[in-house]
Length: 314
Image (cartoon, rainbow, N blue to C red; front, side, top):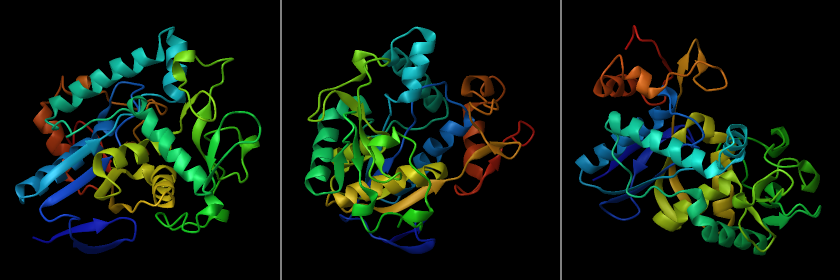
């Protein structure tokens, strides 16, 4: 059977031929579990749940991976502000996410890996990139390790950008970088203000993984060097997915054949987010409508179309 999918990387439609007949591997970037899930958070999960079910209905054996980012700056900051361990924040918010997705009938993934459970795979992938000349430890003694964007001529191919037109990466102190656009693969432990529990041993000293390398390592472990579909929200195309593709292919892996990105759910024309104060938490919404009704509202529009949320429309 041949299916047709829209390839958002090149803006055209191609025949979708699975890497292995009758099988399909999908990796979807899950949430950073630092707050309660709102309607905007769950659109990606619902859209890719529909894709998964459609492939299964068409006879495919689907391996579906949706990760959890359970360590990052926001989680650490929230733990400090609340006087609680960062991992307690991540665990509790992860449970809230599970309840929200279950309420709108999103099937659990085949596997749901967490970043902190894959430190050995992440370190191994970084070592491979350093050995191949695509990454380097910072020379400022910070313990940071960066991907060298200039070392990979295809950098920018996913979003069709030139390196010189890109803004500097803001995921680490720029003083240790060769180029402002180089992004962090490993973040050295800042013992002055980061808890010891947020650091793991590595060849470059104690620290934690950067955001982008987590997904490459987890996708590789569960789906192999090459898989069919990588998905997520459209806001992840750059820099997250651009960086994922660059570091994975620089490491010698084909990585994803197709990229699919769902659009936002907006309120007053803006992306729904905590920072804008316009969030609609799932439990509150489900006090007014059933889960099946919220799910249908989310999937009624094309997955790449923005949806302006209102209870009147719902």
